[in-house]
Length: 240
Ligand code: BEZ
Picture 1 (spheres, helix red, strand yellow):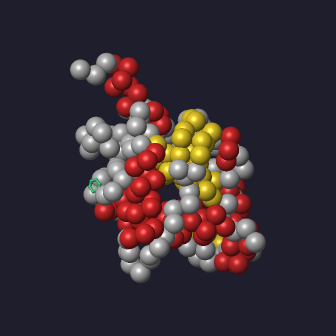
Picture 2 (cartoon, rainbow, N blue to C red):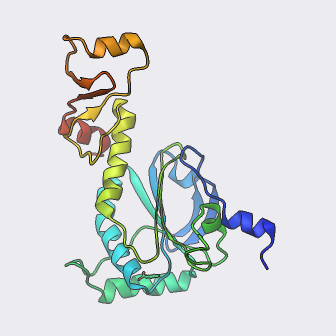
Picture 3 (tube, rainbow, N blue to C red):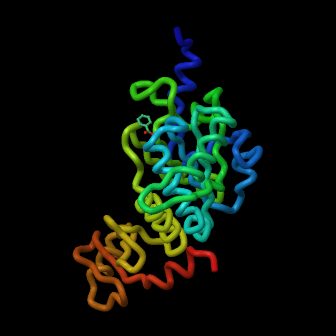
């Protein structure tokens, strides 16, 4: 029988805008102190159900293959599952030595993978969702900004492999929002028009509908876009 405290720990769900819960953890790359070790960087902290499982294996190969791309966007990756360190090490060695996925082979996972047998980190991040599994983490993705604030969260069930293009797109979109003080419309990619924050007063609404609006185009007073050059976005968010 679970105590109320245990139930509360399992159901702790950090939210967008919260400070990322701190932790110290043993990983395949040594001990990680989070968030201190990652100050000034974006972090994608993600969980997977278990080592030596096929969907997770396909995800790790894909993420490891893309790691450099994420690093160039000032973003570090950290994985987690409810497995021990030696299982993690054996699994990552097997992936490198034996597993090929979509033409990717001999892939070395260089980012840290947290051992979390005690579930202490998983519980802090709401990665255990008992309706799905009481013993395995769901596929959670936390986007944490350079100030340690949770900026976006995506959860997937156990059987659904993630879309890493979307994870990268979301990261670049949030960095663009921060750098240019704009919002990004549906399916936005660098080079697409961006959205201006809604007019906050009748005067601004009137202005937006005026003729001399510079590079701003409005469908109506509340729906205004402007061009944002792809190179300007990429040179701002990607490290040289
Ligand atoms: C997998 O990674 O293949 C997997 C893990 C848990 C449940 C279903 C699939």
